[in-house]
Length: 466
Image 1 (cartoon, rainbow, N blue to C red):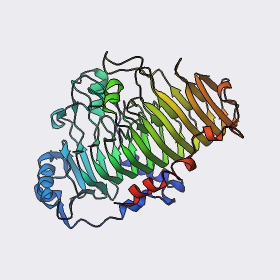
Image 2: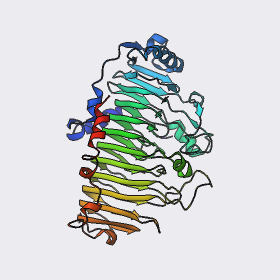
Image 3: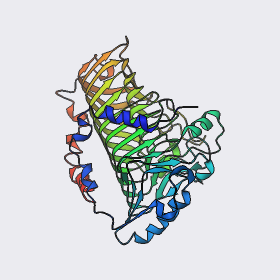
Image 4: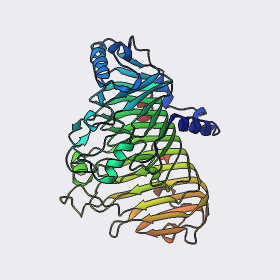
């Protein structure tokens, strides 16, 4: 059985993060959204019979408390306070205009009984469960069609106790796809902050079909060998800001998605306007930042800066395949520090699991205008594995000011890629050797050309308006 993370592990992680000055001290647009009016109504979960002994199942207490607080949704909203204790529960729904607040020593524990995680329909942009045909278990904390939802506290903890799910998955005894720890669907005005998330059964935080989402100052931990325990996965969502997070899991730290093959193409909701700042973490089997592989609805306008990945499999990845369709464009990643990473940059065009046999193999993804700059790395095995698709070249890939200390004899491996570079060491592969300057800077996607100029008004408005 895999060892789950404990609160002792959390304290060690927080001590580590304290040594990295820019993790929490830098100014941020996202923080503007946290200066919100205090909810005029508040109750504690204990008022509804909850017992924080780690044994008593409190699902009904959470459901009844939230049902009661719904009466205040049009009166300024309400807060559900979870005090110190270990509060075992199954899945429960949130409501609009709600703050779920966890005290410093509060721990919400996911039940080990799969019956406490109801089965719901698959997402329409996926057509089936990610792991198995049919439905999927609902997340521990769940909400849909909501407005103005805050999940926060004084660094309380939400622990999915996922080891039982990981074992069921590896033994192939599951009937449905595993649940996420937190999933919000079709919601707007979402803030998740100042909490620790442990041992998710599957992906940890999953905003899907959402807008105006902030994830800030969270720690996400799962064992490095836990399967598919992604950290934060914005999925067919727009105007998402993620900052000041530490993530150590068994898969991607952040994975931006937008639907799977023909279902994602038909649903046609992209992920766009995604900001990631000051992310620290590591993994064994995934990437620091990944786009895809389910990206059939499109991914664009991604801005990521001040990233630190250590002793990880891959730092930056775009995953796709024939049949995905969709696009990945206008991606700008800068100020990246790497230590002990196997592959710094990877484009994987053979990531080919498909939902069924009805996908269109001629649906080719469009990958273009990807700029990565200001990267330093020590003890890196491979600088780049950049593989496009034959007959579907990835265009306008631009690498600038990259200095990596490589331990292998073949730092770059590229095919079906077109682009430019400048000040890259070791020298990049042939398809990218043409210099960015003086003739090709306009072919490379830059933040100043889009996000800060033409897009500044729109981005500023959503970050400051609520």
